[in-house]
Amino acid sequence: MVCPVCKEQMIILELHEVEIDYCPACSGIWLDAGELELLLEDQGEREKIVSSFHLDPEHPEKPYRCPICRKKMDKVYVGEKKELLIDKCPDNDGLWFDEGELKDVLNLGDKDNKVVELLNDLFGANLNNQNGGNK
Image 1: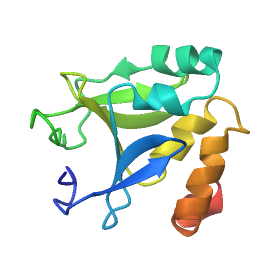
Image 2: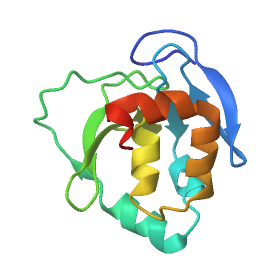
Image 3: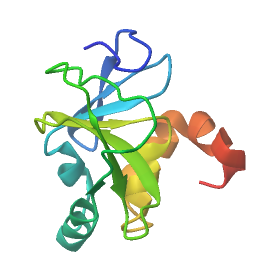
Image 4: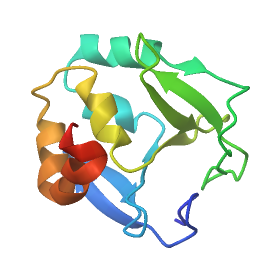
């Protein structure tokens, strides 16, 4: 799969028994439809986060193209306070997370999520250096 941001070839990694597409060039992560839900350990967490998605059709950030269907992805806020902005395929093929965003989304739920620990183990230096290490 080709990265929707930098157009480099992405690699497949297994994260908590879920195959994710990772771009080593820009550190972005693509999750196919349903994979975010698999990474969220608690049913209540899943419902809370997925139900918090709010489409922002007027957001000025340049839209990326879905690496599967090639349509321009929607900008979607995640969180009750619209804390994070991610990219979502309009055909529900999946979600794009820029560097560190997947960890941020998972942290909206259970702070002790094992997947966050795995992300830190896999990409720790990149994730912890982002935004002054406050993530």
